[in-house]
Image 1 (cartoon, rainbow, N blue to C red):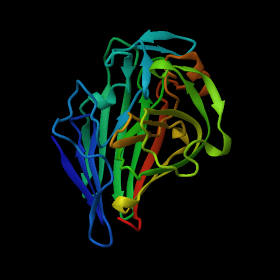
Image 2: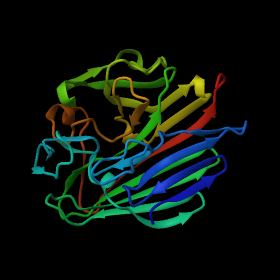
Image 3: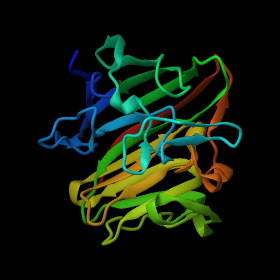
Image 4: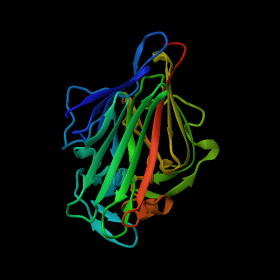
Length: 299
């Protein structure tokens, strides 16, 4: 099944199970009848297994973000994972795999991705439940360790939001990693007054934005007055280490709820701040994110 649509009330989503379980689009029809896209839309290039999609939203597992040099090291055991990036491995395997459709109705679907072979120890079963209701979209994830030994797991979601010159990001966190070249962490720092986005400043910058936050309160609000759109992202307690990233001058911003910090699969400083979760055989890691829209004056 190449793709299908979900809808409920004012919300509609396009699902691409064979392309990494991707949520390819999410739209919302406001009370005035205008249709607004909540996620960055697909360009001319189709998603492929060779490169992760730069639109929509997709899942990162069995670890989120970067395992530098293709190494997973939890301080007890160390092993290599297949590389898919010049720096090593990024975003795990789920976003480059085909997902099976276990259940589907008008506004709800359950997708499953299993990994039972590979050059590394990771064996797992992941289920992604995508549900639309009258007030938004909720995406829930479970990852179960199917290996015969305990392993370090993590996961996250990678939504891509459109960003205009007047887009503002409001979110609060207690700390962040100190990131150096290639996003490698040298330590962590406490943030004053909730950090750089606590006051909802304009996001667009002339330089790259890269944050790996710690102690997030679980709520991020993206407001674009020129589009008359406000998007509220919320996430479970298990996904309170979000990454905020965008290249210089980009027309998008990424706010990525995840269970651990950038580089935690491989870097001691990141692991000390927010490690992966050790799962015994048969144990499960679970979490969710929710995206909801509202109207703003001016758009």
